[in-house]
Image (cartoon, rainbow, N blue to C red):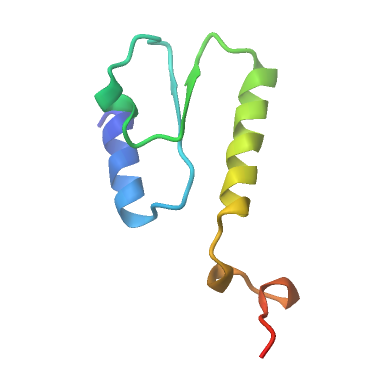
Amino acid sequence: MNGDVVAEHMKAGQPDVPIALLSADDGLPESALRWVDAFVSKSESPANLLQIVEYLLDLHLLFAPLNGLTGARGRRAA
């Protein structure tokens, strides 16, 4: 199974989970990138990869639904 197919299946089940596609092929067609939130070339430095992962995690937390949170931070005032 290719990464784009895995991404499609993952987004179908959990659309809010960010997905980064890592590939050595910098010329992937748009159809292969349709379901991913970021593309990372294998030629990228580890520092750039880390920045992309941090960005996706921040983005995920920024748009996380309130009802998915637990603990005091997730409670709403009545």
